[in-house]
Amino acid sequence: PDARAAQLDLAGRRVVVTAGGTREPLDPVRFLGNRSSGRQGIALAEAATARGAEVVLIAAHLEVPAPAGVDLREVSTALQMQDAAALASEGADVVIMAAAVADYRPVEVSEGKIKKDERGDTMTLELVRNPDILAGLAAAKAPGQLVVGFAAETEPDRAAQLELGRSKLARKGADLLVLNRVGWSEGFATERNDITVLDAGADIVLEAVGSKLSVAHRILDVIAERLH
Ligand code: CTP
Ligand code: CA
Image (tube, rainbow, N blue to C red; front, side):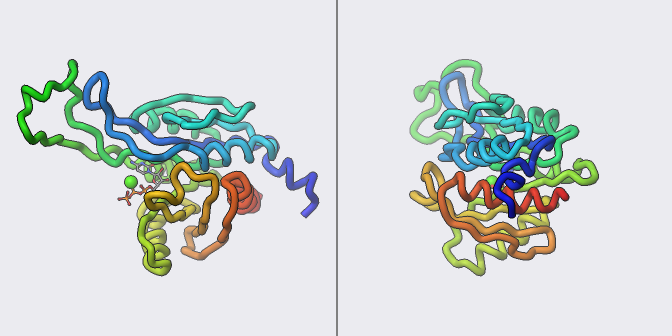
């Protein structure tokens, strides 16, 4: 396609991207977190902005700076991200859940610092499930809105990974699911990415390898095409 037209193919579109990893407090100085750096979400926000979209970036503990030109909304916990995402999604054309959302949070948040003398040699944390933000957004989506999820799987077998992706996509009710393999070194905090995009028909609509920014553009190609 024409390079100039492709560059602004999201002009006038409102795109919401969540990025980073939520943190669930245990006490004033401790939290449960994850290894997401926010880079893929940031790349999506940057790429969408470059293509003319108005971008709201809902960011949880990014390890790298947010791109210029986005409406940055910083959150910490999954519940805060849920509120921010619900608010920003109203009237949005596209919602992309690239954030790593904590699946559970501590049932109790201690007012003061937890002291080990009061706990002994072992300590058990009771956790409660966080709401599934993506499933909620997909269930509430307006006609024509595209809801996109991500799935980071450690499953090494390709066929098994695709199966996990397909069932996750169906369970969440999203329009597209971006699958990427993560391990101790892949995916999180790296510059490169290897992704597969599934659609609601469970078809593979894209496979891409490259920098997080180039992968972001490929994902946006799929999204832009589906908005028309
Ligand atoms: N997600 C979400 N709310 C949660 C958990 C996940 O919106 N409470 C979103 C993520 O942002 C991602 C997608 O759901 O877009 C898939 O996240 P993932 O962790 O792979 O799926 P889960 O449903 O949490 O399943 P599990 O971690 O058990 O594999
Ligand atoms: Ca999860």
